[in-house]
Length: 280
Image (cartoon, rainbow, N blue to C red; front, side, top):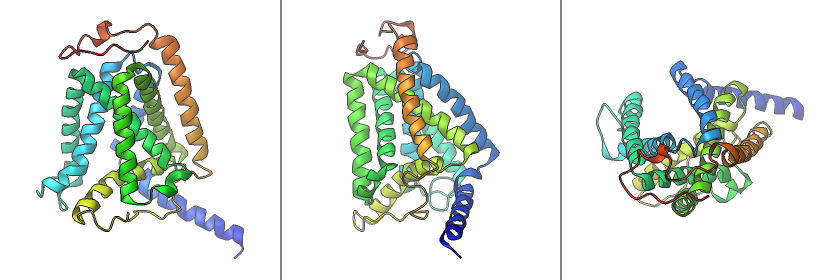
C-alpha cells in the first residue's frame, strides 16, 4: 500500500468518525441548530439594535454552560446530572438554568452587557485554540487560564467600551451560529473543532476537582489529528468566519446601529439599574 492510498484510508476513517461524533445528531437537535443559524443571521446584522434579545441569549448561554459543567459535582440524583443520571434531563435542567440566566441578563443591563463580553471572550479563546497556538495549551491549567482570562477581559471591556464590544460580539457569534449550521451539510472539521474545545471546559473542571488539582493532563476524547486545529477542510470556514465578522461590524456601524443611543426605546425595558451610555 503506497502513501497516497494510506492517506485516503486515513481520511475516510476520520470522516466516518466525524460523522459519528458530530453529524449523527437527533432530528430535533438538527432543527434547533438550523433555527439558531437563521437567528444568527439577524444577530450578525443587527445585534446591537436588538441588544435586549442578545443579552438574553448571552445570559442563557452562560447559565446553561455553568449549570451543565458544575451541576454533576453537586447533584447526585438518578434523574439529573450525576454520573448515572439521564443525559436528556441534564440538558433540560441546564436549559432551565439558562432561561433564568437569560432573564437576569436581560433585566440587569450592566450584567447583560458583561455576559455579552464574556461570550465574546469565550469565542476568542476558541479561535485561539483552533489555531496553531493550540500547541501551547495542552495542559488543563493553560486551557483554563486562557478561557478565564479572555472571558473576564472582554467582559470588563464591554463595561467601558460597550458599543464596540457588543457589535463585535454579536457579529462574531452570529457568524459562528450560521457557519455551525452550514457545516452540518458541508461536513468539514469546523463543528468538531468548536465542540471539542467548548466541551473541554467540563472535562477540565471535572478532572481538576476530582484529582484535587493534581495530574492536570487532558484526556482527549478523540484522536489528536481529528481537527483540534486548522485542517485543510476547516481553513475556509475559519477564514469565512473572520471575513463575515468584519462585514457584520461594518453593517451594524453604518446601518443598523447608527445613531442608536441609551435613550432608545429598545433599551427602556432594562430600567432596573443605571445604564452606561453606549460609545458612539
